Length: 114
Length: 116
Image 1 (tube, chains in turn blue, green):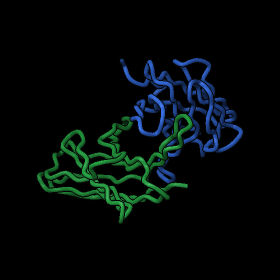
Image 2 (image 1 turned 45 degrees about the vertical axis):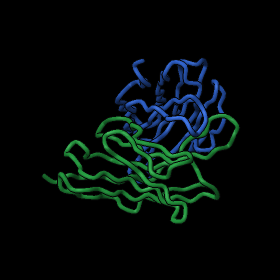
Image 3 (image 1 turned 90 degrees about the horizontal axis):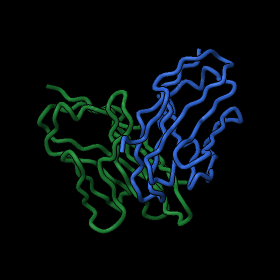
Image 4 (image 1 turned 135 degrees about the horizontal axis):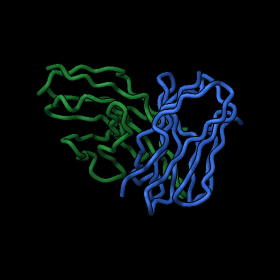
């Protein structure tokens, strides 16, 4: 398996624009996680899905953020409208489910909002 | 809610020297404990994990960690570091909930610098 695949690797956008980050989890994994990494706050869990269903989105910072998982092989994280403080590295991870299983991380999307 | 503290933001170690990275957690019971490593521009890779049983766990790349319940600690060690170990190291906890997947709570990370 190619691992967790995220796209794009880098995104530069202007404030106010819509941004969509994409993630393809490892085949057979039924849990998917979106994390945000910043210098100030470290790694924060934004939302996670189990069997394509959002389980906990309490980490989503604002209504401007939304995430979907229409099927087992694809998820998106959307920011609309984007703001400079959204600049961060966004990671997607997948696992077999349950906190005891290893989460495999993608290489991340570095988002810069100018 | 659970939390993780990595008290050292940066650590500098000479190549060949031993290493210990500290991690303390806060949780009412024994959580699942993990150490991940992140190389520049990369995602996180699991080094090792602890769920139960033997409190000394072995991981990849020659790393080990010891769970100490009395100290709520899960420190990472390596007897002899290599220049390729320079990276960011994250301690994380997972909470058994019994109901589907749970995300991890990460510490802020420790940046390891290797001196030649």
